Image 1 (tube, rainbow, N blue to C red):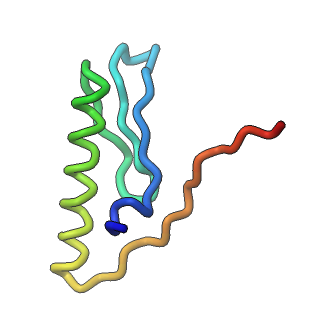
Image 2: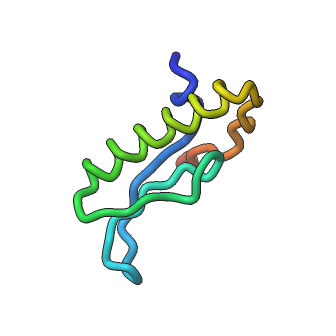
Length: 73
């Protein structure tokens, strides 16, 4: 498993901003764009860059805290 796989990330539509917003709250506030697939791709690239930056500076990454919600049946 890649380190980036430990962090929950998603893309959602913002009615207020009229764009898709990609989020990974454990590492960044988010990115935005018009195409949800492109936003997700860019979000993943930014997360990889952040992880490499932390590694380069020999700083520990924040622990993943945000988890997807489960359906409760």
